[in-house]
Structure formats: C-alpha cells, structure tokens
Length: 298
Image (cartoon, rainbow, N blue to C red; front, top):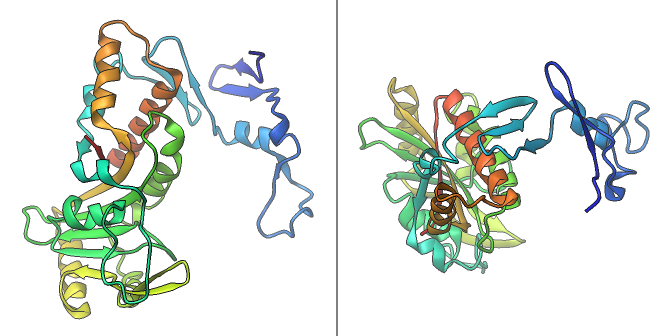
C-alpha cells in the first residue's frame, strides 16, 4: 500500500504534511459567517486537520499514541487493559437490539421493544427516579437521569447508539464527540433549565410522527421534576456520570483481544485506535470531575 501522507517530527509537535487523498483534495474549511464558497480565507481540509491537531498517530509500541497534538504513554493496554475494562459495563438487552430508536406511530406511548432507547429506559437507567428524554433539538444527551434517593445523589447523561458489532473506532467517534461536548452541561445550568423544562413537557416527535411518548418518563409532574433537579444540582457531593450506550461493542470480545495481547498477540490497528479513543473520552470526563462509562452488549 502506497503512503498517503508524511509526518514531520518537531521539538514540540508532530506535523501532518503532504496528505494525499483525492477524496478531500478539493474540500476546504470556511467560516460559517460567510456565504458558501466566498470565504477568501478558506483553508484546505488537509491543512486544517494539521493546524487543529485533528489526527491520531499510533506506534509499534502499544504504550504510545499521539492524540490532539500531545504524546501519551499508557502501559495498560499491553498489560491487559484493566483501566479500559473498569469503564465497560455489559447489559444483556443490548445484544437483542435491532435499532437505535425503533419505529414510531401516532398514539404510541413507549419506545419500541428491541431498540437501544428502550434498553436505556427499562434497564440501564432503571436506578434513576427522574428520567427525561432530551433527544433532538438542543440535545444535551438522549436521556438525562437523576437519582435523588441515592447517596450521593447522581446526575447521568446517556448517549445511545446502535450498530453492527465491531471493534472499530469509527462507530464511536460521533458518540464520544457528543459526550465530551456536553460535559459542561452536566451541572444542569440554572439559566438553561426553564427552556429545557418546557421542551420536556412536550410529547416525543420523530420523523414527522407525533407520538404520545412522554419526554418526562419518570419523576412526577413538571413542577416536581423541576424541584428535584434544583435539589440535586445544588448538592455539594452530587456524582455526575456519562454513559455511551451502544449495541456495537461486546465486552467479551474486548476481553478476548486484551487477553491475547497479554499472551503476545498484537491487536489490530483498528482496536488500538478504539482503545485510545475511549481512553481519551474517559480522561476528558475525569478532567471535568465526571465519571465516564460505556455500556455495551455482554
């Protein structure tokens, strides 16, 4: 296979040079404030990727990775990946799912059986006495859960995805990006809640179909939910958690690859990329004082 790019290793960063991909050769990044095609300062996509450090470099040494413009060392992958497995939770219902949200019909009062959304409602978020569907629009997460009865109290964001079983990082890029983007909203900012509460008081609508699915799935009346959110938001020891819920990943399959690594079998580059993507997600959560998890099929 012919090389498609060259790298330049400097004192403080690795630069991406000579990215030769015909599919992106004519693509440029422009400012949204300008009409399409009229930004005189448009930047070729290849140069933008380099400038913003939007690339990952993997090495023959599994402990090393260059991500977002910084070099990282993590011996855990070669040692069995215990730190990754600690963040993976298995839910049996995800092995039976066939879609993310299911199909919709007028008058429908629940998400359909066999979709990831239904798994979140029935089993994954079953410990939350307040559960809100925030899908679509100004979405913070597909679901927001609040546990007022636990000690400490908890706020949980759930990002749901469905896909064929895979160990590829490509299935996670969107959900990881969405989860990281909304970490700052996990405190449930008071100035944003009134508009959110108005939206949650509506019934769920998708693909032009108006259902009778309540967005306030659990927790009481709008006033009761508002009061519970205020109490939890103000708690000094509230625990914030974010979950990527996916049917595309199997914990057993991940365990199998990690066990093989310990025995000396090199993992595929796709798996190494997945490992580093998920570890960067968990690290971003830690930096914000949030606990990050992935819920997957067994």
